[in-house]
Length: 339
Image (cartoon, rainbow, N blue to C red; front, side):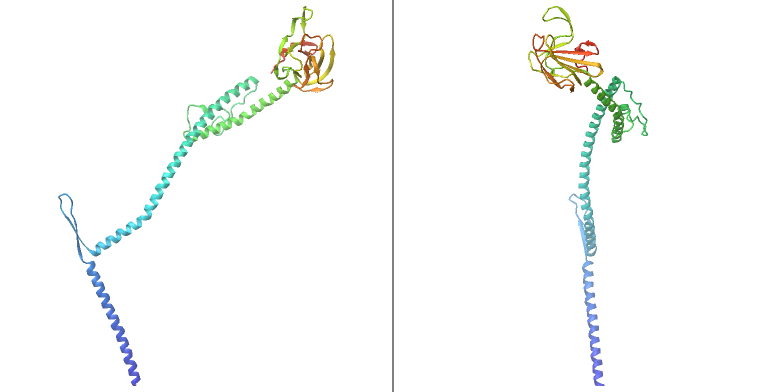
């Protein structure tokens, strides 16, 4: 019993101490909050005194309200700082975009100038092509209506004074029309190319070039009625004499053909060559010092076949050049530079 009573007393003492500690703590906390309340509840007077003569403004508040106002202001300032940083970044980005826009506008102006130059060149090309087609007898196709509402193969729409579309869209439309026109111009240009190829083949088969290499020499005696250099009598000169005042200058075939004669005539032509060409045309090259082909050889236009000489009946080194069409002798001058 005595032991039980002692434990009971100890327990009561412990509980009593705990309760006293809690009560003491609450009292101290209450005292602290009371002192804080008294501090924050202290009255303050803020006076605004103007420099000029004016009424002094008195604002009465307490420490708590002033502290709360400062906290709110600090919170607002801190909260607006990210927005300020974003605004600064946005301003820098805006400035960069403005610079890029200026550069883009400058490039666009340059592109428009080049586009105008291109269109002017296209107009000149159209005029030249139309004239060339008319001279060659090639009919031009009629412009084809496109779904865009313009004439795809006609450049007239590019130079219309009415600007249906403004801004960069007009340049785009012009380029599209120009591309369509150039695509349609391919066929007549190909026709011209084929015609020139055919004519080029024809011109290599017909004597039409100067028979001396590099175009040197002069006509010392023309075709037709002339005084004979030995007899002094009038006679018909059946060819053209070309002189370079020296022996050895190379003589060329004036067209593609086959060598049908290589011979020597003591009383006339001296060393001479006769070449047969297409369309019943023959050419003769006489008074040669050297012959560089043989009978039966196939020669090409501009091929060297001999050299100027003074063989046969001749007063000096020169080339006697003849052109025969069938059984007729014709003036070689009419076939030189026939292109």
